[in-house]
Image (tube, rainbow, N blue to C red; front, side, top):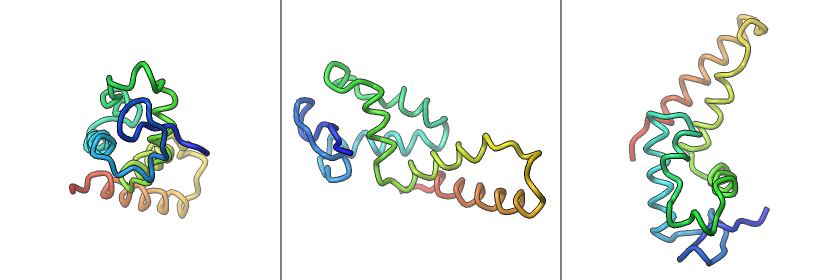
Length: 113
């Protein structure tokens, strides 16, 4: 998938994972920080860069952030997916594994830089 996340200014195209621009790093750091307290969807609403509103639609911004190789962001996405699993369908061993995985993901999300 080709990324259109801005690199230096809103009209430049690049792959967000290759971006080492401070502009992008600040948004990622803000989202990672907000992941400790808010749902991922709320983090994106809070962190959606106003300077990109006219160039990069929120949906595209959301897709780009979901693909970003951040351990915290990926752990948050996985944790939220695991939290919606119907626990009544799980066997005790599966429930125990799920619980352990959730604890590990929570620790990753709560880690500080």
